[in-house]
Image (cartoon, rainbow, N blue to C red):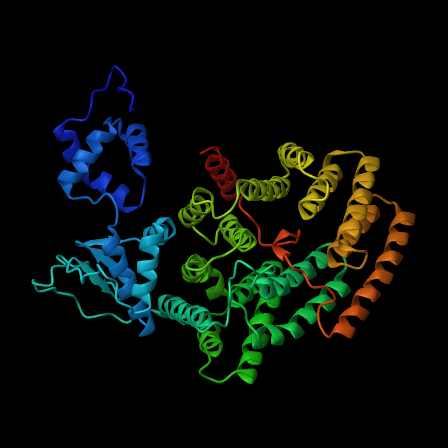
Length: 540
C-alpha cells in the first residue's frame, strides 16, 4: 500500500496528472517499473499517487501494461524473417516503439507455452492461434519519424530511408550475420545442449579464452617471456577453434580482443589482424566469419570496443532462444549465468537483461537454490576484487569473510575453485594490510591449495607462483624469491613440454569460468547491483 503524502502535500489532482503526463510517459517508455516511477515522481516532483491511481491513469492514456502474447509472437516472427534478409528491425505496437531490452526480457519471462509458440513462429511454422496483427509494424531503423498510425487500413507515410553511417551499419550487419550463424548451428545439430551431457558444449571457446587471459596474468606478475610464449600458443590454437567452433566461439574471440587491447592496444590490433587473415586463408570467402571480419576490420579495435555491448546482447539473446528451447542441465545453466554476470559487471550487458535471466533461472527453478547461492558467492568474489582495485581493503576483507563463511558450511570436497579464489583474495588482502609474515603465510597457503586442486604444472598454480614470487622480490625476500623462481622455471618447462607433446594446451579445462583469471576491469557499482539481485531473488 502506498503511504499517504506528507502533511504539506496532497494526492495528485487532474491538473497535476496533465502537467506531468509527458514526463511519466517518458519514464514508462524507458522501461522503468511502476514502483520506480512512483518513487522518482515523489522524489523529484513531490508528486503523490497510489498504484491504483497510476494504473487507472495509464488505462485512460492508452499506455499498455505489457506486451500481449500474440503481439510478441508476431514481432519475433517478423524480426526473424527480416533478419534472414539481412535487415535490422525496430518494432512498433499501436504507434509506440518497443525497446529491444523489453522484448528480450519478455522472452526470458514468457510462459513455456508462449516460448514454444515464439520458437515455432521464428522457424516459419504455423502457430494455431497466431494472427497477422495490423497494429504491429516492424521496419528498418532510420532517422525518419515514428509512424503516426500503424493501422494497415490507413496510409502510412514513411520518409525515404537514409543510408546509415558506417558506425551504425557495421554493428547491425554483424548482429544479423551472428544471429543467422547461431540459428544455423543449433538447427542443423552442429551444437547440442543435452541434459545427459556431463561436459558443456561451450567449453572449447572459453578454455581458449581463459588461456589468453592467463597469459596476461603472467605478464602482469613479471613473467613476460612466459606470458608471451603462452599467448603464442593461444594464437596457434585459434586455428583449431576456427575450424571447430562452438556456439560461444565468436563471443570468446571478441572478448579476447578486448582483453588484449585493455593491456596494450597494439596487442589487440595484432590479434584481430592475425585472426582475420587466418580466417581468410582457411574458410571460404562467403563463410559467416569472413563476412564478419570484412566488416570489423573497417572499424578496427575502436569499433569492437564501441559496439561490443550491442553485439553481446544480440548474441546472447539468440543463443538463449535455442538453449531455452531444449532440455538443459544445471551445469549448462550455471555456465550461461557466468557469462551474463561477467559481461554485465564489465559494462557490456545491460542490467535489465541480466535481471530477466537471473529471475528466470531462479524463479523458474532452472537452477537449484544451492547453485544460485554458489553464483552469489562467485559474484561476491568479483565484488571483493573490485574493492581491492579501488584500495578499499576493509570492504574487500569483509566480503571475503562472507564467502569463506559460506564455504565453511559446505563439504570440504566441494567448490574447490571457489576455495582457491578465496585464498587468492586472502593473499592480496594480506599484501596490502597485513604483516610481511602474514602475507607470506597467505601466499604459501595459496600455492598449496592451487597445487592440491590443479597440480604443480597447471596454469592456475603457475600464475599463483608468479604472483608470490613478485611479492617476495618486492619486500626484499631475495632467497625465497630465487628458490621460487627456480621452481617456477622447472614447472614451466614441464608445462611447455606437455604443450608440445599434445600439440596444444597442456591441460583441458572443463569449467574455465570457475577459475580465477585476469579479465576486463569490472565496475564496482555493477557488481554490487548483481550481488543485490541474487540476494533479492534468493529471498523470494
